[in-house]
Length: 161
Image (cartoon, rainbow, N blue to C red):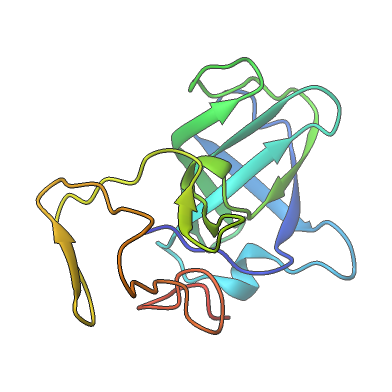
């Protein structure tokens, strides 16, 4: 599971294609650092941007230290259309945000939807609704509510602050 928190944005200098991104600090007074929101060893969503032409999004491991770091362990997408680590040669901004490929949302009809297909590899139990054994969860599943009153991932959620 990868974690997400509101307003986490930091800067970093020239990570190149290295697995390790050394974080410098909050990108502005209204932003939070990864260290203020996450525990060392947490998997976190990240997006790295040079704020001009290159962006990379993925899942990494946050490590608290001097300096705090993110290990770019799984690149999900980048602006080249690949899953390779991009070569950032100057200052970058590192965001904590959910990549669209991992997003679950309500569609216009109020049904649960994903950007890509959601396949269950284990079992999901939500009240009387059950799914599992690799079967896709149908958006029309009777009474299935995975998004509680507090937002995405409310069941057993790292999203709640």
